Length: 251
Length: 98
Image (tube, rainbow over all chains, first blue to last red; front, side):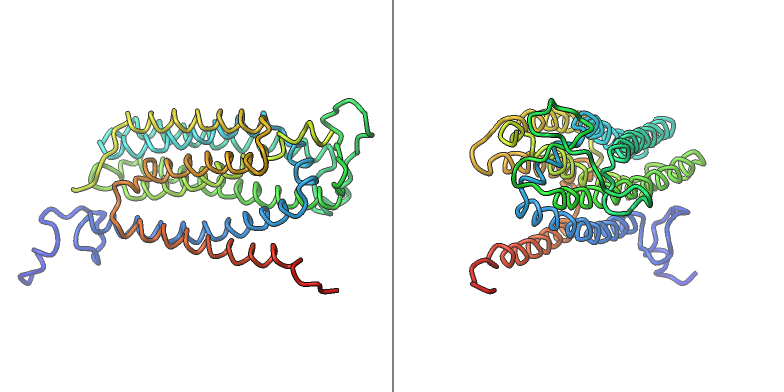
């Protein structure tokens, strides 16, 4: 081996170290930076949909409040708690890998996956409710067009009927549900990808691939998972909460 | 290894703050604040929660400045996207076009 090469690489080279990196630390930092650049594209991707939501909510406040109040705040709230808890277990999985406690790390990863699946299950219940109330927009489901039952004025509150306040048209309520399904659908897709990533990580951890010197894949998957959590942190108030205080005004 | 390991105590504290933030934002949603304050309150809580996740769960507080720069660039472009589009939509009624 020519002289000089030995000094550029760490004395005890880790088997996960790729030849184009000087050492494990440089490799880990490059990976983290790359993941953040990817997350920037994700921020811009979701940003476009958040912008669409902002514009149309500003344009049709009554319809958006009416449609938003029709969502199940209980299920949305529980899902928020589930997702934040999963972010915590994800952070703990990274910690246990960093200190080399493999069993605890695997337990935390599995817990994160279970919480992610719980979120998707609750989301599925919500989607089914929208389906039975004919709230799936357009012709997304053939033979089941957007056609909610509208409550008559003065009728007692029925959660299966849509309460249309003055100034709100059915068209604009449908627009809200387009945005709702686009945003929560894309978010759910990201959750599914995240669960796939974490399943791979659990398998790799089980095979003993990670330890205090090498755990970049778990950390980077964690960044992705936390990002998906952040998207929901914004989706929950915007989709479920922002019309609630108007309930008494809208009648 | 110069890697910073965050103590679980910090994760637990952040987790509890995030949970209380969620409770707070639900409670605030049912109160009728004047003007657009409901949206302001909800978004302020969401931004604080997101910042805590980024700084602690995502370790950005202990990350190199380069990561900070990447995030700042993302926020800057998001701000451009929103500012330019909203300035268009909100001023369209200024011109009497039939």
